[in-house]
Amino acid sequence: MPTADALVLGCSGAGKTVLIRQLRVLLAGKRGGRAGAKAAAAERAAFSLQTTPTVGVEIHKLAALRLREVGAPMAATWRRYATDARMVVFVVDLARADLLASAAAELLELLLAPPGHGAAAADTVDTVDTVDTARARRPLFAVFLNKSDAPHPAAREDVDAVLRLGDLSACLAQPLPVFRGSAATGEGCEALLSWIVASKQELLLEED
Ligand SMILES: Nc1nc2c(ncn2[C@@H]2O[C@H](COP(=O)(O)OP(=O)(O)OP(=O)(O)O)[C@@H](O)[C@H]2O)c(=O)[nH]1
Ligand SMILES: [Mg+2]
Image (cartoon, rainbow, N blue to C red; front, side):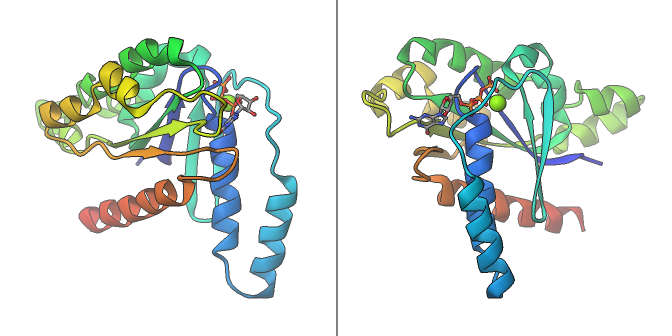
């Protein structure tokens, strides 16, 4: 069984932790009633842009969602974690045009990882049949282009030229939704959250 609904990955400092905090605020706002309004106000008050680098693995429980951030120093293990996830949100730092190429390389490696080679599969898979089952459960991917609020964010054409997201999606025959926004201001986060929630519903229906 997957231990997280979505894995949040991306280069060091891309904004994964703040993005998860922003999703927490948005989700709290969706709870109805006075208790919901109070919870949302508390989450907004607690929201902060101050972070320390995530060096290990952090699991964040947001209402019914479980998100797992695996810090950039653990990039060598991302592929193994990806096999164990239903979804992967890959965060790209628009404020660091110089890091776009490494982001592209990391994303490509994740997308091309043969399903069934991850930690969960390695622990449990011992026949060809179960490897095929694992292949059918490749995670859904989305890309979040973060820090659109930065003074000079990378332009979409530059991102497309380096990450080749359209080509990747066509080549892998897998949708690769791209969201542009800011974990700091919340721009684009609602759309990403809707994708996560809708994808989770779809995956649960498939599992029934
Ligand atoms: N301007 C701006 N800054 C952001 C945004 N998101 C994150 N930051 C800042 O970028 C820095 C790194 O953010 P984190 O959320 O810690 O990044 P991370 O990807 O979790 O980093 P690691 O855990 O070290 O891999 C912090 O100073 C954040 O405040 C954003 O949307 N806009
Ligand atoms: Mg972090």
